[in-house]
Image (cartoon, one colour):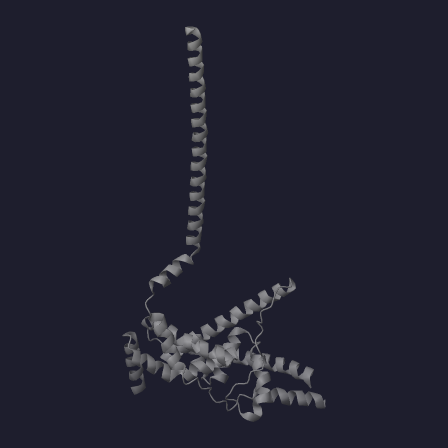
Length: 112
Length: 194
């Protein structure tokens, strides 16, 4: 019973603890800080800021990746083509050489 | 009448982008905004940060202010919205941190310190006020808005209604329910701690 009364008196005291509350005062520099934030925001963006904003975009990263893949693919297919041409050239040279030699040797045999 | 005229001229000057008018707006309203934010957030650094954001938001959107309410009512609305947004995002983070902790990967401290005492509380009531603020933090959103505006900021029921866009009886009902909830929460607390 006594404990209930203590609880109730504490509850009432807590509920009444805001009576006579004084308004909290803001930091005296709040005004300066707000103005500083506004001025910082108004500063025109430099070329570096703009570049950084572009680079940070996911679309930019995706575009760069697609470009790198495309360049890689182009280089690979070019080099394969070049290798193919090179091996064909060697074949042609060899076969021409071989055929000429044979013709020459056959002709020379017939002459004799 | 003179006050109304000066408010109208202040609004006009603000709409023209007059920096001196903006300084007047901050100077005249900084304490009411800070005190309200402090009532909701119960942390002086957060309250100051929100107060700055409120004035920046006011600067950005003054052109949209139609003058249907008092300038201070409009500022209170921005403050309440910003405070509730911050509290909601904290709640979401807390929930996410709880889920992360189940999977064992959470090092971030998201729980806010709870021992807050408003600097304007009378010295001998501070211990009780501390428990009251803990209970206020647990109130449903609408009840919390009504209670903080009426009891911490000291607005009349009519002014609270203007900020909340509600009628005076609706505000009174919210305050009544807030008090009942606070009484229940405080009774639970003192039952466990006495």
